[in-house]
Length: 314
Image (cartoon, rainbow, N blue to C red; front, top):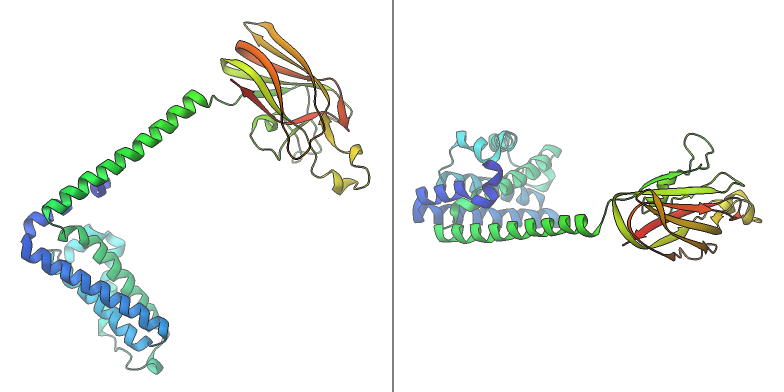
């Protein structure tokens, strides 16, 4: 139930009922005073009056601890309110009050700067944890309804997005190929690159070879067309800036075949152009219940065939 406290506000509701109006107001006043002192400390520190800022940081923590006392949070209850780690930090910052405070900026040492920052952090954490306890019961009820409404709204958005993904974003096809180009175990151009939705990765056939790329659709689906981006070798200029065609890989003539129920149900021939500004070609392919699509590369530009991206359109 602790995880749901920001929505349910059960602890705040119980504390508000137990404290009564007078103690809630006293705790709220101390929290406001702590926030004012913390603001003054930060302003003074930024302007260079750091000894004065140190004193206001100490007062900010004292006011936050005063608010805790008004709210009925005793020393042993700090760990339940803040957690063990923050409760320990608050205790150490409070115990450091016995250290002599700097009377001028010349007396300010490194440990004073660290203690200044720690006191401000602890004061802010404690005041924030106590704030809900100072709310009136009707304010807590309103906050609970608002938070529930926001939470349900966010959950509805996530549910709608998940439904959209299921209904309108079918799973990516599984890709296989007759072969793919490999230089070493690190530098490869496998068929999966053609369906990873990354325009900068691509499937390449080995240099000088034709072949095929096959997409398996699970579950089978109706298809209206393919949207294809031809392969492109962005590093071709690095290999030979004067003769890009020797190293570039791009498919030219292709045959697209769709299969359903173990038989071919549609086929079309298409000639792709060399890539210009990440263009895509839309290839009509009307078929129902398609289980797999094979793209046969029968000729190529440059050093060999390949494809950058293939998208199956419903």
